[in-house]
Image 1: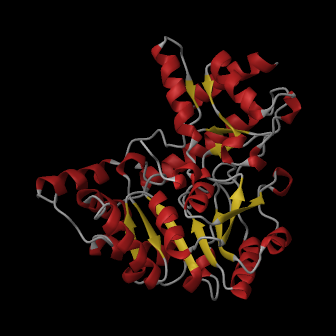
Image 2 (image 1 turned 60 degrees about the horizontal axis):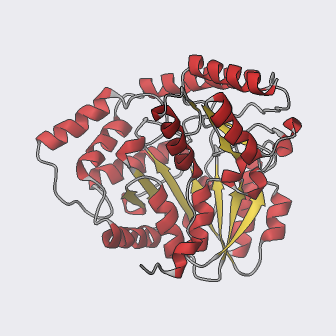
Length: 385
């Protein structure tokens, strides 16, 4: 069977490959602690599940508008207006199955072959994959531990060329847990406005912030009309498998993404959208409790990793990942990640799964119980100490 050449440019997400290997080891009788997958270990709040069940009982099972349920688009517009501090009209909202479609369809709609896209590295691997897939040139901007995994504005300026079409930012960030400060966003906005560049702002961890305040670049003067903001229900509401996300962007971009959605999936699952309405309009107590628990786990894992020979781990300000520097072990990232899984029974990811500048690091998700995190730390410590 012949595959199109473009398939050779398509990347993947290594977390799922490591998860598959970990599951295989479990089938062989091994006990594995899972710190590889970026998924809250909490259940979806009951009122959200009830809303989906009620929608099914009411027969909400047919097609819906490609751009999304009007009530959910209105709820998202209200939520973003309130949480991000800039006015949003429902026509500027498009509902999609998860956050990844906004990355794919947003790049597809706005970036031509031969254009350049600046993206964070280490960063979510789907950015580079999609940039390559559409025939554009990925231009990585390094995120370094010595700068708290924030980008360097002067380095960003040096990467901009007449072909730069888009800048992708992610804060709080996967895989580092780093958070962009207001001065960073202002510098990015200045570059974008001066050079007529679109910004894709990936914000699914907006509510999982342990200190400070979340700022969205779209709220800065002159940026709403050139920003594609994407968010989802997966992290904040523990709804990863529900596949529900959205983009907030200029109306012409929202319409283009909806057209791509019509061609690809027709619409986002309609009864799931009813659950999304309940999530945005309902109580947030369980979400707040989840974030408080993540903060407790963060402190446990950071303190524990810094006791292991060769590890140097920052205390992240957001998301639920740590990205320790492991160069002090004298073992490269890929080899160490493999040894920790095969010999210690702990599934982690090599920093290189998130790009070349992730070398010398591991990513560990602390979306697991304190007891399991402590057991993982003991096993890694026994292996290296």
